[in-house]
Structures are given as C-alpha cells and as structure tokens.
Image 1 (tube, rainbow, N blue to C red):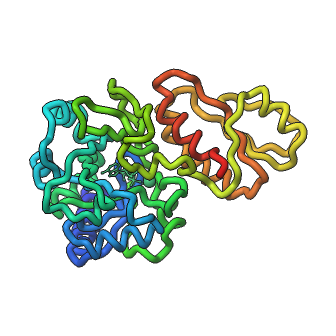
Image 2: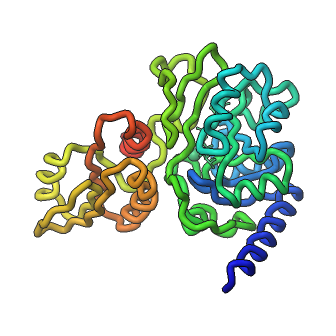
Length: 315
Ligand code: TXA
Ligand code: MG
C-alpha cells in the first residue's frame, strides 16, 4: 500500500474518531506514552462512560489532553510562571501538569478536587485527533482500573473488547510508560509520578498533602500473576525451588528448570518500552510467580522502579 493511501486512511479514521467524540462516545487512541481511552472533556456523560468502562472509582481524576498551549486557560487558572516554562520546554510531550482548575470545569473530571491534570501529547495521531476535535479530551490509560497500561492496540482490545467502538492502531508506543506528573499548584513544582521526562523538582515525600493520584495507590500497574521484585542472586536461588516460573532480568542464564526468561534492556528507555508488553506476555503464561530483577538505584530508573514496585505490591 502506498504511503499516501495510508495517510488518507488514517485521516478517515481520525475523522471517524472526531465524529464519535462529538456524539459523546469513547475512543481509544495512541499517545507516545501509552494508549488512552478518550472522551469529550466538556461532556459529563461521556466522561462518566470512561469511569464506568475502566471500573475506576469516581474520585480518581482524569487528565485533559489538549492540542495547543493556548487551550491551557480553558481548563486552568492561576497558572504559575514556572508551569509555563515547563510547557515551553516539554510540550508537546510526556508531561502532565496539575494546575488549579478553572471555575467552570466539571468536577466529574477532577474527581471532586479543585485541581486539574493537563497534557499536550506529541504523538502525531493524538495531535491530529485533538486538533480536529478542537476541544479537550479526557484520556486515562486504556486499561481496566489497577491493570497494566496498554502500549499496543491489541492490549487495549484485550482490556475492553467490543465495549469501545473505535480503537485507533498506531503501533507500539514509543515510550511505553505514562507521563511524568508535576504538581504546579504550590510555590515550586513537585513530581507526583516519575515518568519519561526527568524533571529537577522535589519528588513527593510527604504522602499526607499530595493531590489524589490513582497511580499513587500502592498496588497499580499489576498483572494477575503475583510479581516479586528481587535481587538477581535471590532469583537464581528461588528458581531452583520453584516450578514453572517467569523471570525478567538483565541477563539470562542456562538452567535445567522450568523458567521462562525475558531479557530486559540495560537502558531505562529501552526497558520502559518493553515493560508492559513483557508483563502482559508473562501474565498469560499463568505461572505461579513473575520474578523481576531489581533495577539500578540511579534517578534515570525512578519511573521504572516506581511501576515495578507498584506491580509487585502485596495487598
Ligand atoms: O501518559 C499518560 O499520562 C497517559 C496518556 C494516555 O496520556 N494517561 C494516563 O492517565 O496515564 P491515567 O488516568 O491512567 O493516569 C493519570 C494520573 C492518575 O493517577 C490521576 O489520578 C492523576 O493522573 N491525576 C489526574 N488529575 C489529577 C489531579 N487533578 N490531581 C492529582 N492527580 C491527578
Ligand atoms: Mg492509568
């Protein structure tokens, strides 16, 4: 198929998505981080559908996605200078800002809070969709509440089946983990969820006064199979005693035991890109446990360590 024909087809699909959004329907689309399950942010019924489809509690706020920095003022007020500076540096891209919500913004989106999450994604399909729709689109990650995020259209299909009318297939997501979330409601920025962009801001330390972030629930991004995060030595000892086990590690070893090894990249970007697909794949093997080698302590691994810690959290 010629490239120009593909472009025509994608244009048609995007037009179809815009029509569905205008009708108050839900559409799944790719972003550079993970797939999003989107709805018209100005239509409370449509927004409610997203909560229902995900099985997400109503007090967990959604992110509004925009096509242009000029749309910020439609959604937020009292925006500090440093927040504008962050948008200039990182938008479009994998960064979500938490700002004071404009007065008219539906509290259905914000989970009843006075703050709102806003992101301007970089993925060309997401950008075209947002540009053509011309209004904000709420889009949490396209997975059922607490599950692993989707980084391919197939993952999203596995999560929602036919409950969603349109899933736009943009291939595997380039980054593979969710955006960095920065709280911009205080005097200085604070990272609430580490992500692909390393921002030199104080990370959350004090859990008491952080805005509600569902990604901050201890158990999240989790497969059905129990996940254990362990040093390599412990994994090597453990696999001798366990039958049918899955391992994600930086190097793989010869064993005569029943082990499904998955070798993970040594660089955080490469690791992030494969993380969720690998978790899903291993989950489908229905083994007793997924053993994951601990990742380095460096800051560049913060976002991945965060997701692995949550995936392995025991209730
Ligand atoms: O990369 C991403 O951010 C993806 C793509 C689709 O854009 N979206 C995403 O959305 O990860 P979601 O809903 O799965 O995670 C967004 C997080 C949630 O944990 C939510 O609680 C938090 O952002 N959040 C949204 N609005 C907030 C607010 N006003 N205050 C605090 N946290 C907020
Ligand atoms: Mg999510």
